[in-house]
Image 1 (cartoon, rainbow, N blue to C red):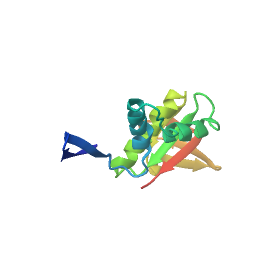
Image 2: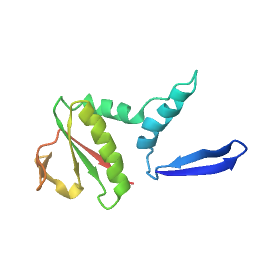
Image 3: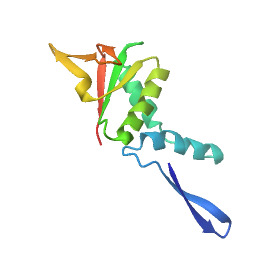
Amino acid sequence: MRFDFHFTTRGWQISEVNAEVLGGYVEASGWNKLFAEQLDGYSAPAHPTATYANAICKTVPDDGLVALAHATVYSQDRQVMAHLGRELERCGRKTCLISPRNLNWSSGQAMLKTGFAIGQPEMVVRRFA
């Protein structure tokens, strides 16, 4: 993350934080909550990552495998998918970060067969910037 500070009449104040990741899941899932906890009478908006993970979990059974496909040349895409993966694992699902090249298809079913993962995911979630 990059923090921007500006000198004010009250000294140095943080004015902005940029995580430099498209989509905003990481930022919106924690940053707003941190601020809301410091201010009486305020609450954070819905947690977008938890909302997304809960929707996935309605389809994927407990202990089911979710393949998280992303553009592996972009660390930002991996960051977002790792963040989503942690939330899915917290909800009892298995995850695997993959490139689309790690998928093989047979009779309309996705299969993983790589040096780091073998199995049939219940769902493939795709993220490309």
